[in-house]
Amino acid sequence: MAGMVIIGAGHAAGQVAASLRQEKYAGPITIIGDELHPPYQRPPLSKQYLAGEQELNRVYLRPEKFYADKNITLKLGVTATAIDCDTKQVRLNHGETLEYDKLILSTGSRPRILNIEGSDLKGIHYLRTIADVDAIRAEMTKGKNLVIVGGGYVGLEVASVGVTQGLTVHVLEMEERILQRVTTPQMSEFYHNLHTGRGVNIHTNTGVSGFSGDGQVQKVICGETEFTADLVIVGIGIIPNIELAQEAGLECNNGIVVDAHCRTSNPDIYAAGDCTNHYNPILDRRLRLESVPNAMEQARVCAANMLGGDKKYSSMPWFWSDQYELKLQMVGFSADGDEQVVRGSMADNQFAVFYLKDGKVVSADAVNSPREFMVCKQLIGKKVDPAVLIDPETDLKTLIS
Ligand SMILES: Cc1cc2nc3c(=O)[nH]c(=O)nc-3n(C[C@H](O)[C@H](O)[C@H](O)COP(=O)(O)OP(=O)(O)OC[C@H]3O[C@@H](n4cnc5c(N)ncnc54)[C@H](O)[C@@H]3O)c2cc1C
Image (cartoon, rainbow, N blue to C red; front, side):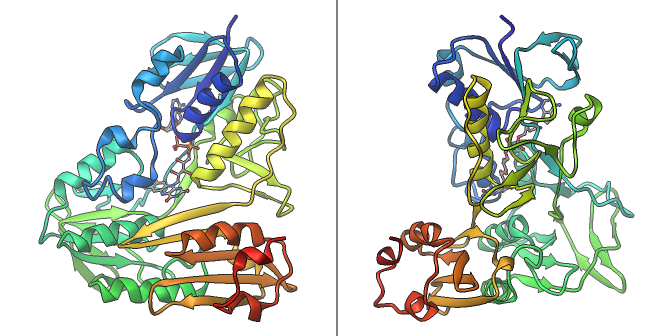
């Protein structure tokens, strides 16, 4: 029996393997990962692990012993270089070939690289892996000048850690507001004020044209303006890892195209996580998501269906971000709304913004309101009077049924 082979040892991979065993699959499971670590969580990399508040073994999804106990083979530091769909084999970089009954692609994504003058200088980092963060942490010491390119969630999380640790922090954002791609002007303004209030320097409408320095980065150049830098972290988005799938002839289009069962265009190959382009039946559109809840849910769907099940993916997208002592939790897409109302107090950093379309809740952003967020998730799709939503006397739970 060839068994189940999983390419990529990230969040989705770890969950697929665990779910296969939970579903009582007893055959061989092999995870191939090009990093040296067992499947781990990336969210702490720009939060607690970067801040030195979380041990490495707490970043791992499960202890290494779990894989040995469950008879799951981890092939780490190994890259899958080709898939032969006809013979159902995967070729690995050191020459080995593995056969599979079913194959999962959970290859994730990689940072978009800035290819401009000076971009190969020392001290310019990207943040995707434990190895990246270990290198950053070694340089991220009090008093240094940290320049962050990109005002997205990862960049802003790093800014909050940096300024809290006593670095001088500049965030350079080429759009007219931070978080422009992912949230509303109101939320961008809230986070802009939060960061500047804590001492972060935010420069919008500021695109980077180059870096300079003598071997080591010293300046970030933005046209006529220069910023002094001891280290730079670039967070300008990600690119899904689809090349392996493409070369194997699988259908790809901004991600590996999967159906409602997380199956690719080949019936024996499934895909889960950041690398997929999937149909979301609740939103009635195709999406490529970069989030842990999506990776976990698709992994469970894959595991069930690889074993002959008929599980369909149907999950409302949600995401979170931690900056300073604020936990932001988001569900749905705020851009889908045509009306927004705020419950709670933005001034006190404790509130929920509800987005409605035709009177129905389509999305919510909750800051430091985890209990309310649980209810927000269940209010999606419900018609609710906005005045009732924001009334502090309203127990949101009563609106669910
Ligand atoms: C800094 C940071 C902070 C984040 N914060 C949040 C957050 O707060 N909330 C949230 O929901 N999401 C967050 N995310 C996103 C979340 O971590 C990802 O959506 C999630 O990790 C996706 O899991 P995955 O298994 O699809 O891919 P990944 O976790 O990226 O794993 C894919 C793995 O496959 C490996 N691989 C690729 N190709 C091959 C190959 N050919 N052979 C062998 N191995 C291969 C890759 O190197 C990688 O190790 C964050 C991401 C980052 C980087």
